[in-house]
Image (cartoon, each protein chain N blue to C red):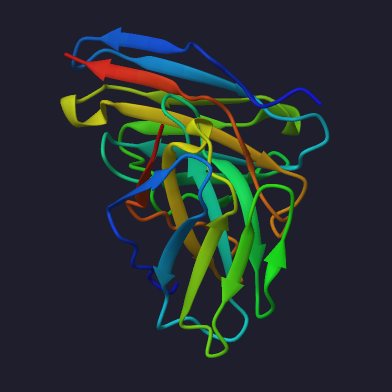
Length: 114
Length: 109
């Protein structure tokens, strides 16, 4: 089966600019997750979707980050405006259901804010 | 969610078994132990999970102590491609994974 697709692979922006990341999960996977991974740390959950509804966004900095999952398939994560500390890899993952054993992660988008 | 403690780094000779320990002393009865690994520039990859019993699949074995306060991931014949960061995670009923900093395993030729 095809994996989780993410684009772009790399992005460099200046602080205060906006940026958007795209994720296409595995076909049929109802649950989608966005993680942020800062260099040297483990991934941190930002938001979890079940179909097109938000299940958990408690760790999402809502003053600058937003995410949507239209039609319960693809998802976009946006940062507006970006700060230097947003430099990280943004990982998307999907699973059949919240309790499904094992998520499938994409390769991520590496964001550098200068 | 229970916290896990792992050594920051380990080395293993190619072809030998790699034994990666994890402490999760505050684990509760319904929490599963999961292992993922992350090869450089890739997303984390699921390896194995367990609740009480030892588990084995084509990638690895998971040994959980009887009191469930610790576990060991075993890669029976490590290869250079197993060089990665290995994460031990305790997952609760909220289904969230809380990743720590993991163990950086280096397999040496």
